[in-house]
Image (cartoon, rainbow, N blue to C red; front, side, top):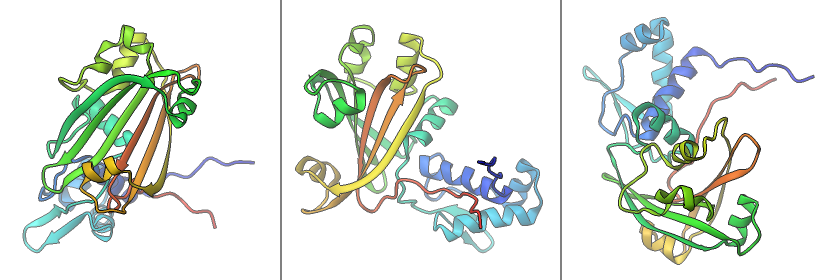
Length: 249
């Protein structure tokens, strides 16, 4: 019979929390992370536990310690997934960090490509709303080409899906939740790799040929109906996620 998974050790929970802040951009390159003493106080753990959490981040090359100064964030080369972005939006009202610049390139209604129709449970060629944005890191340049897709019928009651003059505070899912009274949303994601298209190479500043990381997410309502399909494309030097988990031996 399946068993309840054991909780990760405290030092890995602390490291994971800090790592998410770094990946989301809440802690930017050059920022100082909390000291061992501060982590021990905030998390109510012993100093050695806090020290192990910082050591994990050093091993992952997310931070570096400077003698006599503290521990500081390095450039993470990480791609924030939807989970990190939604957590940030819930906590701070925006999905994007101060180190990110977002360009809402276009929004339109068009016929659904086969993979989009499949993700949204629509007939191939059915009309969908497409919302495109380019995300740039102010330090490292273009980091993500992101496209969100919705059933075109949604735009009648949710017209901001087609508005590119400004972002939707908190993201499109909270917006749709408010408009349609949706609750108990859940999402399923997957990561793959392929060669970049001409447009992706141009937007992300990549040579020809180049591989890209592709992140798909489908969000569902409580009735298991898909309401949004997100497709994010990243340069090949950005990993999509990293996590710790217990291993049964």
